[in-house]
Every structure is written in C-alpha cells, then in structure tokens.
Length: 132
Length: 133
Image (tube, rainbow over all chains, first blue to last red; front, side, top):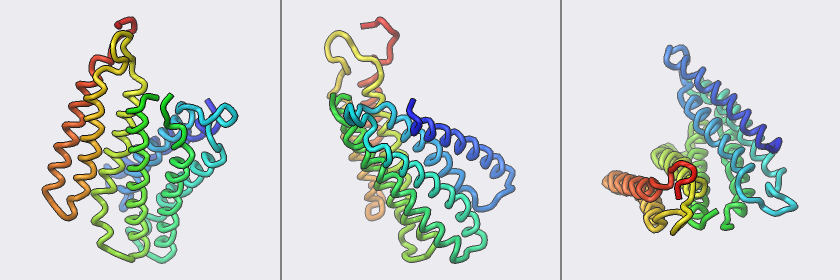
C-alpha cells in the first residue's frame, strides 16, 4: 500500500475516532455548536477521506510510469482536506457561539480548502476511471 | 473497470464536486453573511453528497468488484443496472428541483427507490460463494 494511501487511511481512522468521541460529548450535552463538526468528521474526514485513499491505491493505473497519476496532487488534496477540516473544527463552534470576524473568515478559508481538496482529487483520478 | 462502473464513478465525482461547492457556499455564509438564501442549497448539499457521491460510488465499485459469472453475461443483467444508474441520477436531479417544485422531492425519492430495487435485482445473484458459475 503506497504511503499516500496509508496516510489518507490512518488520518481517516483518527477522524472516525474523534467523531465518535465528539458524539459522546454531544449526547451528554457537554458541547454547543459541535454537531456540524461531528457530521463532517464522519462523512468527510472518515468516509470521503477513506475513499480517497483507497481509490488512489485500487483504481486502474494512470500509466506504467505514473500508476497513481500526479502523486503531488494527491498530497495537496490530502493537505487541503485536513487543513480545511481542522480549521472548520476550530472555527465553526466559535462562530456559532461567539461570532467574530476571525472565526468567520476562517470558515471562508476552510470552505475554499475543502472544495479544492475534492477538485484536486477528481482532477487527478478522473483519467484512472476508465474501461479496461 | 466495466463501462457501467465508469459511468457510476464519474457521475459520483461530479456529484462530489457539486455537493462540495454547495457546502462551501453554505459554510462561507456561516462565516460572512453574504446571501442568506444560500441556505436553500442545504438539501441539495446533503442529497448530492450522500446519494450522488457516497451511494453512487459504492454502487459503481460494487458492480466492478463483486464476483462475475463464468457462463453468459459476466455481470448479470447489465440492462437492469443501466436503468438503475439512469433512475438514480434522474432521481437526484429531480430532488434538486424541490426549491421550485415541492413535489419534486417525493418524485425524486421514488426514482431513487426504483434505482435501488433495480440494482439489487441486477446484482443479487452475483453475491455468491466461490466456485458457483
């Protein structure tokens, strides 16, 4: 399994664990404003990130020279996805309880980073989704 | 990868990008209120990412990966699964019209159920033990 895939999958597992821990806090009503973070840690940080990692590994080769396409793009996708998610996890609860310009603009940056992560993944993987 | 899986997976990629784009707009709206009606995109954000991305990708990869038949069509009744693909995407796009036509939601959901039933019928016999032709 390539390093990029291992990194994606292990980070996905961390997100999964964090999400379920957050789920306990939500059930105990300890936290406010964390529900969107909980959902996105599960759906984006866990499921989508796991898919990205496995797809980079298992989908048909891009070419014999570059089996996984442009690996640098894969690393950028990984970095953008996780930095976007992290910024969201920090700023969204603050914005929902004590809105301020810093947390507001952090959410805007987070939104852009997460979208770009998906865009780079699709751009890098599209050609690998093809008939035998 | 069979042609039908290519269509499923590439369609799921398109839904991923649309869903992420709508989600990014909504998240940015939370940060800096620039156009409150952007929240109307929320049901589309959920539909495109859960059904269009995650479920559709799973269907495409399942059609590719689960065991094939040695006799006859290796992927079983492929026509049924093509109809499933068509119903699924028509259903998702129809639910997107709920902003303007509230009845579009239930019509789209019915199409999605048809897609699921066709997929299950089309794939059922491929879920088989090793050695079964």
